[in-house]
View 1 (cartoon, rainbow, N blue to C red):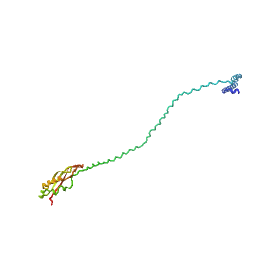
View 2: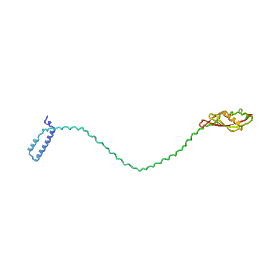
View 3: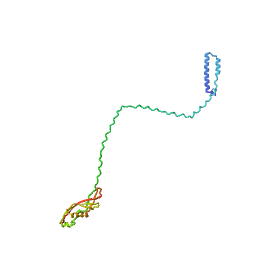
View 4: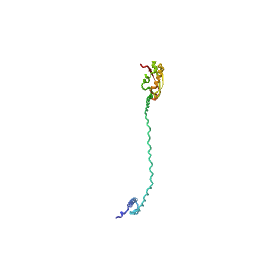
Length: 216
């Protein structure tokens, strides 16, 4: 291996630089008439090719960065967008129409009251009234004297349908015939009692006539 192969590249660069400087000084000396001996001495001093400079000390590695975490960046506040000014338009406001008048109220007449059912009824005779007095009931004295006539009467009837009183409304002209009339009617007549509006039995009256006539 040649010696020059073991020269450090840095030293080689330094040697090249020195040779260049030497060459420059030599030329400068020739131009300025310098003494050749001075140039030789300088060349001897500079003719050191294999001078090795000590390697620079190794720089220690940089310390690791601290574990301090960087604070989070401040939040970015987006400025609000400018609100455009209101646009005024020349609009004609329509006047609202008045609501139509409500129809007049319809009068509904009240319902008529329910008709009152009248259940009242007059007293009525049971059976045939012609059987209340017969020819067999003719007073013997009046028959002998051949007295005749028509007697009108009115009786009051109780709630049980029986006669409670008898009055002569028109006389036959003979007291015995009138008396016999009320006696026979009070004893034989039976009635359906009168009724009030609610249909309940009540007192009533009945009027009629008996004609007294001698059978032929």
